[in-house]
Length: 345
Ligand SMILES: *Cc1c(COP(=O)(O)O)cnc(C)c1O
Image 1: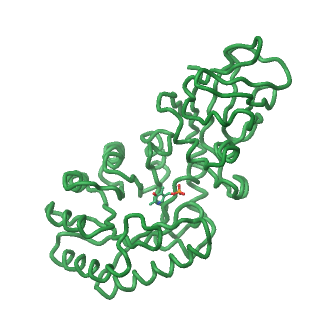
Image 2: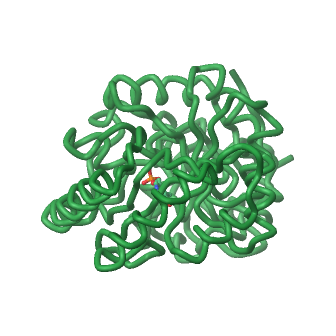
Image 3: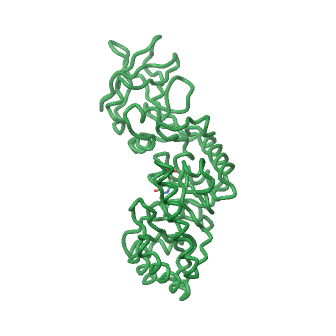
């Protein structure tokens, strides 16, 4: 196993504690889409559950299923990508909370009716134009939801939206739109107990965006925003360290990067990797391997840190991302699923 992603579940637990401390009394819904941002869904949700996380943001129904199977009936699992009426039925059978951003889905949920009221979270479009009900259609939408709730088909557990977290002014506008939508929903007779708007950045920085719950993914995994505050300032740390071994030292020092093919080759020449003898510059990276140079001898088999918590000279996933103009999530997510994930706690 010469390329390995080492996932430190104690570091996850520490990040979860910091998130809880920062956002309380709002609840933390841990976002676990994309295989828990590439860290491995089941170990992550199991540890988070042990640490007291009760809500999980799964994105799709399939992920929701895996979380349900891992955690049992008490976990609250939120999905917001539900494509067909079959998926609606599957989601209801597994008691998933469904994010509803259009009236067609609301009607499908009513049609797929189960004995227990379906738990739904109504989504208002606050400006991102990504699957949400437009403000002009919102009054009719919440009126229909109130009727279905009255009939016992659904329970409106939440009202939610998503913000870009790129500009404070845009986020403020989105929050105004969110508050307006909440008041229209209230006038329609709805009493959602879960109002949620913020992801990582706004959850940490802007108390007025926290409402009843925040949906935090990146910071739980210790992925800081590109160009933003560092991990120390945020009080989090990366939970994963990607290592590769030296496979050749003559004429150049090469690391095995055959299963790093998810990483952009443009990292070559732009980043420093960590080694027992200190930082080493990555000269080139391609599908057959990477060449590195630095002070001191390298031995075949020596473990090189490609990214991870600071310590041996390597940067974090976001440090790599910044070198090639992207975000840390993209580095974490593009790592091949073939790379073994090894867990410690
Ligand atoms: C991914 C996602 C989040 C989490 O965002 P982070 O910045 O990773 O915390 C929250 N809400 C929605 C709708 C998302 O898709």
